[in-house]
Length: 144
Image (tube, rainbow, N blue to C red; front, top):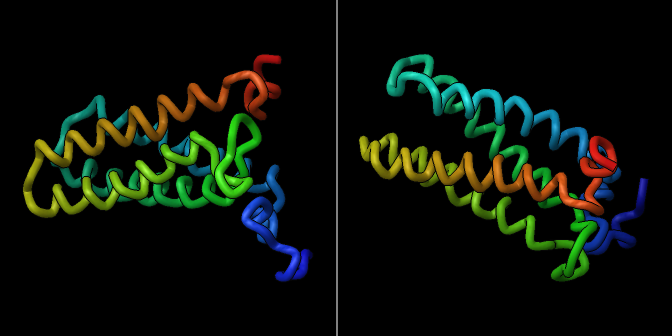
């Protein structure tokens, strides 16, 4: 294990787990979130099942966003030698999940729906497309 004094912003996440372990953790949370999110978007809203799965989906998305913040950007320019453009989607998730939850609690279905669709499209679809771009790990695993 690394000594705390050797930790920089660049390798912050790797102080806890190495990059590959973080990637597996991320995939282990984002894939079920993708399945649950797709189910929720395609099925009847407002039911007890929807509310339960929605909370599970939100927790998975929060956990996956926090995990990705520990993973350094491996492609493109970085800020502080760690954060890349793809991390903006992590921050979108960290904003959208509480906003969607609070909107649902307040009975504002229109606002809740908008946040959840934005969360799914930005946090899963767009981020998923970026992860299959050349130079990224999933591209190397599945396409290259």
